Length: 86
Image (cartoon, rainbow, N blue to C red; front, side):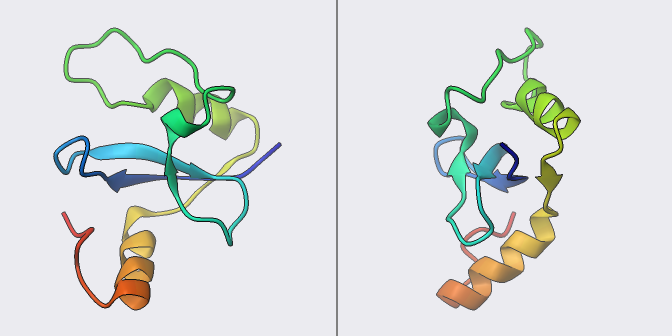
């Protein structure tokens, strides 16, 4: 199984970038924790990025990374605002 991953600011993480995934380009982005069967434990680094270990694993298996800026443009086009801008 391959899909797309992106680092997107999330409300739950107080605007910090967290890993989001989607299995198909037409699906909405969801936090990586919504896919427990794809996640691997985060590295025990204080203040480390949530999802970093999972992103490395998925990239090694052929997942595509989508630039955060591209997702921001998509959100603005879809919702007419800058609510996901950092």
